[in-house]
Image 1: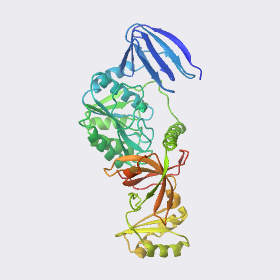
Image 2: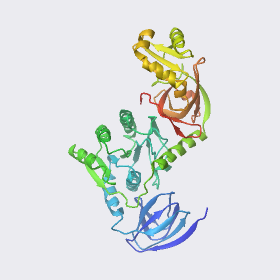
Image 3: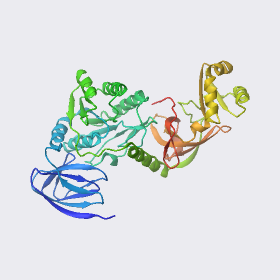
Image 4: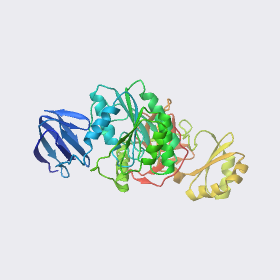
Length: 433
């Protein structure tokens, strides 16, 4: 990889934009970047595809190491929002809880970094809660995560989760209550350990259901302050709603030079994360009698052989049925068989003498994204189901967990992932937290 070395002399108050990959070394003076004051001898790295504004606090000299797409260019002060961010971060980086809202690619994560660094510079203890399921800063897709930044940072994605809650979806759509409940659990964990808690959110803000979700999330968290990234104006209705609810709202301009990711790029980032998880995964056999899947449900009841015989006559194919009191779970071999039974749900309930019937298939279970939970209801690992042995009541799971004895129960997600980390057909199961 070709790396270019450049020297740059900056006058006091001058602004430049740095696009990564790049490494910045301060040879003379002091500069401001991402809420940090970098004096002589300090260095910082800008990741691939990121564009950050840098301001010279005094006459300064920099040494830049630029990767193939890296560059440094002057920024017009009238086009740059760095001074606005400095003022906003100063007001927001105080004790309490902050929620950061905004549309997709509006600068939420970068501004959250700004707040975190400003707070750390003041000596505050900081917690960060990432509620974005699809474009994770901390942890794997489909989770809500908590972390405690200890040192100033250039990229939140360099942090490791302290605690995670499994949602199993890449969008909060139809999982709103689960995300809110998980956020509140992590908020309780963070209180007492941090002076300032920053809650970052996803970019779903525009339609009526999005506004209802975001206002519900804010109401549950009850923050001291809300930062709304202005973006292209999609948050205006949400902002007015929150102001009418008497929340302290700070409107923060979005960077004019921010990169806008396509849907395929977002999918690529998620699949890279899934592939990374599976790269270190191992295969485990898990007996559903000791580690049931709660939200299918599977493994909670007893095998219902009489019902299996009745349904097998209907389908002319093997099935698995278990019953717990008046609830039964039926697993067919093929998806089309499960769909056929769903059309006969009322008749099947009468036939099996149950009031509730859950129907799925081995095809639906294969490659399903799952969360592995311990006895204290903590997420201890992630994985995918490779197969289910009906006779042995045993799942074959590919997972990144290292200690199988920790697993107490399993939650099924709503997406499928191949062994290579590619997203596939979605399948909905009830969301638990």
